[in-house]
Amino acid sequence: MPVEKKRPRGLKGSAAAKASKKTKTDEQPESTAEFPENAQTVVIDKIVEEGDEVGEAAALFESAMQKLETDPTAALPLLRGTIHESDRILRNHNDKEPLPALFYYTYGSALYELGRLTEDEEFEPYLDAAEDRLNESLECKDADLESKIHIALAKIWLAKAAGTVSEGDQKVPELSLKALTTLDEALGSARVDSGVIIELADIVQNHGDLYEKLESRDIFRSWAENALEKVLKDEPTNASALSGLGYCKLSFANYLLDNIQETDDDVEKTELSKDEVKAYNAILESKKYFEKAKEELIKVEKVSPQILSDLAETYLNEANLVLNEEEQLAIYQNAVDSIKEANALIKEKKLDFALPDALSSFLEEFQAEH
Image (tube, rainbow, N blue to C red):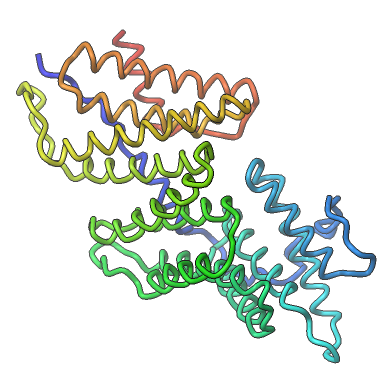
């Protein structure tokens, strides 16, 4: 009896959503009128010299970035507060002394991050405003901030380039390549925190997932993998880097699987095709990294639905390529266990996280059959 395939479909669509947003309004987001009056009334942890308004805005943005890692919803008022304060500083500023590079860097970076989080508005106006502010920051010629500014600009260019990628036209935009070159120069000229590198790898990998041609995708996947491998060389137990590398491998496998011609399920398969073997090997690599990431997260009691979802998808794709029915069933059970664990965690901690529909559908089908 041929092995039935239970390949999840539609999971890779989230990459495009991360890389480029299509939304409603195109209003310029710079005016304080668009932000709540109390947006700047938040507590910041960093000690700032009294009267240092630029320092206060920078501290507010720093607090927002810390929140962004664990609770994006809580980061929103902090980002709005940063922009509110920056806008007020700019309006009240006299031209006798120029504002420092830190002011424009903070303002531009906050605009970019808020644009990424704001679901009901277009991203492009935020990107334009952020780029303008960051270019003003560069003009201040602050050597200490230069690499940070270039990294922030590269993220904006990747987001802008994402909006130009369309089906049929698969030429990699010059802006994307410029972003990668800029990142290489920035990372090579200054010591950059591993968390920033991991975030950049995620952005670059997701950008690569927008392309239909493998050679185009590989440009960005290779960059992301190299960046993450460098992090793991110094921090071998970094769960975020492990998970990121697992996703790079899974993305490659998913591309191969999505481009393999479907075979007749009524015909028993006795061996894998060349591309299926490539996909299977990539899946095994992906599983290795995801499982290691989960191990590290368990140690610090920070297992998340995301890592469990990634593992479930990996197990599911692995099982689809296993020809032995008994072995396949055992791997499907691993996927089921991961999905159930994720659902239990979401319920227990009341998390704002939804598993991909394909995983939920698989769980329902599997439980109905077994």
